[in-house]
Image (cartoon, rainbow, N blue to C red):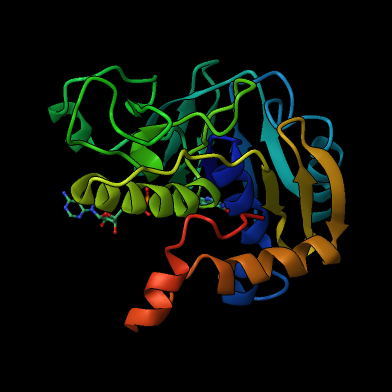
Length: 245
Ligand SMILES: Cc1cc2nc3c(=O)[nH]c(=O)nc-3n(C[C@H](O)[C@H](O)[C@H](O)COP(=O)(O)OP(=O)(O)OC[C@H]3O[C@@H](n4cnc5c(N)ncnc54)[C@H](O)[C@@H]3O)c2cc1C
């Protein structure tokens, strides 16, 4: 199996695959999982807090990396890389690139490279009086020192709370709340090897292995889900002053 792109999605997909493929095909199945990435190093953009765990997990799980190469074409039998190399594969997973919804193209305004709309501190689209943006379509400053929200549920949840509050405030003519989310964490799943958890935009290592995996499981099975369809619970969960982890 070939995974095109070795960013967060590609890594989580690839490291999960050996266990899943063996569960489906049998313990003795001859499986290969190959990640193709154009960067010169494994996990080049993830920082030194994460890279050692990723390298160890890849070796432990038997994940192969092909670096300095991009997937140039995909056909029924496999992929051809920019360096001319051919890899036969029955399954190719494409994980390259985030993109904001094309609906954003209908809104006049400044955009970042992913198509996200630039917003002010109250999440109103710059230059627009009645349009707010949140989540994956908003290019929003998270603090006053130059960091911006990633396309992540971590940011989308808080952005949604502030945007909802500020739309209501706008309609009611009361003061909005300025979006602020200085804390940033990363929790990367590494399949059967475990996971890695870092804090800060410089990704300082805090947890590895099973401890990080337990946290990741909690995030994926509890934290990212919306509240029950109950008016009081939904309104309580939408409060922008809830501290964000
Ligand atoms: C494979 C993968 C793994 C990820 N893992 C993580 C992770 O581990 N941690 C993390 O923080 N983030 C992760 N993310 C990112 C995270 O999922 C997104 O950043 C987050 O879901 C963005 O929330 P959102 O509400 O802005 O958009 P979405 O969650 O995409 O929600 C948009 C909703 O709008 C609907 N919609 C779209 N167009 C229209 C329309 N025209 N009219 C009506 N409805 C419409 C869609 O169906 C969807 O339900 C991952 C993303 C992917 C793809």
